[in-house]
Image (tube, protein in one colour):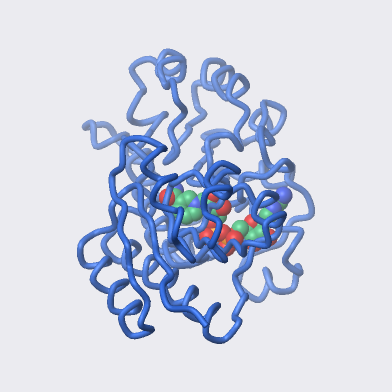
Length: 311
Ligand code: NAD
C-alpha cells in the first residue's frame, strides 16, 4: 500500500550508516529523503509535508511538526531516549512512535567504564588511584544499557545491584545482579549508574537526600538524561562532599556552577563529555539507523509494532 516512506535527519548519520539505511529502503522500494544538519525549524516543517515515515535522532517532533506531516504514519527515534517526541500528540493523530532500544547499549556501557577508570585513576595526573575490582555498582533502571554495563562490571569483578519496578526481580537475579526494592537502596553502594528514561516519575528524582546516603567515594554516573538529577541539589552535594564524584555524559546547559563547586578537581571528581557521546560510535550509529529503517519496513509491510511507545 505504500510506496514512499521518507526519513529526516538533523544531525547527520555517518556515511556508512546512511548507505545501509539506503539499502534497506531500496530493497523495500521506498524512497529515502535526507535532511541533515538543517539550521531552522522551517526546513524541517517543509521537509515533513510529504513523508510517510521519519527516522529521527535528536530532532524535536512536536505538535507543529505533526501538524505539517499530514501523511505521516510512523516516526522512529534511532536510539533509546525518546523525550524529543511528543507522544501524546502522536497518539492523538494515530501516528505510531518507536525507539530502537538496545542498539547503542554497548557503546554507552563502554563510555561508562571509560569515565569510571579516568575518575578512579585521578585522570592519570601522576597520583595513586584505586581499582574497580570488588567494588559495588547499582543500576537505576535495568534495561538494555544497564545490562550492558552490568556485563562489563562482571568482567571487572564488581558486584551489581538493580532497581527496576517494571522488570520482575527474578529476571534481575537471573542476569546475575541483586534486585533491590527501592531507589533509596541503590544509594547504599559506591557507584550508582542511571539508566532510566526521562519521565515525570524520574525527572529531578536524584536529590540530595539520596546522594547524601552514599558511602565514602560515592560516585553518580549519568548517561541517561541531565534532568533526572536535581540540579541545585547536585551542585550543593559537589560543594559539601569532597569525596563525591559525578561522571556525566549528558551535560547541563550551564556547567560553570558545577565546575565552581569542585574547583581544581574538575576532570577527576567531575567529568563531563563535550557533548552527549555515549552512542557516538561507528557501530552504534549503524545499528540504530538500520534498526529504525527495518522497523519502518516491518511496520508497513507486516504490521509490526513491537517497539511502539506509549504516551
Ligand atoms: P531501555 O528502555 O532498554 O531501559 C530503560 C529501563 O528503565 C527499562 O527497563 C524500564 O523498565 C526502566 N524504568 C522506567 N522507568 C523507571 C523507573 N521510574 N524506575 C526504575 N526503572 C524504570 O533503555 P536503555 O537503552 O537502557 O536506555 C536508558 C536511557 O538511557 C534512555 O532512556 C536514554 O535516555 C538514555 N540513553 C542515553 C544515551 C547516551 O548517548 N548517553 C544512549 C542510550 C540511552
